[in-house]
Image (tube, rainbow, N blue to C red):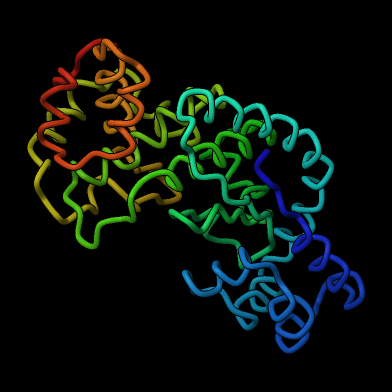
Length: 278
């Protein structure tokens, strides 16, 4: 069984209640961050998360933290579903690394991070937000489970490349989307898939022209209030899905997906072409 840690959430809301919803940066540092889990420490080290910007988020977007409390009741249901999801992962990839998943409270973003050897860290207030509901799906249970499944696949992959090409990043994210769907039952980036539906040939023809670019801005990390963006996730998912469907040995295909060394060779073996029907 893979451990789901929630003590950071308990500690944060004990402080939140004692301070009437407005703890100072000093209190957050002393009573939350300094005594937090290894997962919380990793988030602060990997991303710009500190006591000052958590205090700022509490003051400027207090609804994030009140709304997050409504998600707490879902955590036992989520844990039950995650247990099944992790069992599914181990069934298709027995050598899977099994570090913990830490659910914590942060500054409103990022929703989650993951990495080999470091487990998954999930920000409760970010995943419970209206923005997350729009992009990751309205059902809170599905949102948590599918996001964590996606991130847990990243735990199984090599570390991120320093300067990936569009194709390399698409395959990294596509593998996480596809295997995450296999083990959890749904993709995490719901809005991206909905936005791309019916536009396969147009989007993928553009993608084919950008494969080797190292400027990822047209395909990743480009979500705005008006445009879901992130189409690289969706194209990568389609390439990986094509690869899996064409693979005669599915268990071997899972291992190959998780350890891609030559992106162009993988693309060629997938049989993918712009606009293909899957």
